[in-house]
Image (cartoon, rainbow, N blue to C red; front, side, top):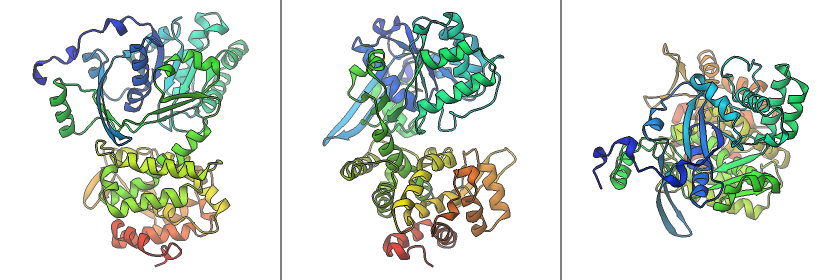
Length: 505
């Protein structure tokens, strides 16, 4: 095998006649690692088993970033699967070639609309982060719309026009953004946008009756591009350079809400037991959203400010690991706003903590803090509200995590337009749509005022969190102690004192 530097990037492996000629059946909005590490991988696996037999056209919705690596590598990439399952170490390298091409929306919108008019197209996928599925009042008539729902509406209109409203040409649409009822929410927004654009009633009827929006849930830890040392080690192992290489855990779940017709259309589900298609996926969603993602969100500020850079480092730090366990089992589990069997929740919690400890995955806390505020609202506020409905005491570990969130968001907006926070003299980027709001608030307010104003901001949370008995007091006490003694010292106090006393000076 040639040395990695001797093999041209666009010759990572020879053309695969088994997949190169397959029709383009999927239009995907998003180039992110989660889509490539789960849905795209599963479709590629099905293609290699002679099931589904369709490739993916990917739309890069934003103009930022570089897509040259996709072109240089003929849209192929390596998925390095690492983990432990049933006591067995899993180490597998998979070459994925389900993507046929990548189109940048701003530059290649006519080509996207051509795909929309293809008789081969069956499925639309998306992952545009939690803030991607939002209503934006905009015209869809000139070039690529700004919002994802706007782009989707334009695609569906182009398809309707290409086939003269043929109801048999409707599509299955599966968003994977981590918001409750993502399919139903997207459907309502697209319909609202169609009305805003004054589109004809026959088209709106076709939108409603010919297309199927499926609520879905994706669950796989895909940290992103590995750090330089890990990437080099994998390159040496593989024998070639791959700029699109990603590492993922072995666990995988793609739950899709659908009937037998959906199951027949999405035939790739036959290729892997990790794909579940059934009429109700709420249990999967609630366990994952509240216990895995909710724990990530409430822990990321704590762990990062305690100088743990990755999830694995946090789980190897006794106090942080103990905090994660207490948060998940004592507070998030009883706060799940869904009827969940206690044994199932306990089993999921233990499995999740084992996944967090995966020695092969470097999941960086800073990546988890992206859109921190939106994640806190979607993942944790419903749990917090439900906890107060059923429990007679404030959730002090949640308050601890919320205080760490406020401290993490203590940023300064510099001349480059970016907001930066500070951890022990080290600057970090705050990637949050509310970063400027927090920078201004911290610049003008005391810590107690920050807590009071943020908790009362119903525009952020949809609730007045200051009305929750004891919550404001606990958050303020923790935040002040963080600033006086540091997060690690405060965490030790929180774990060692009796819960009822933990927020008292």
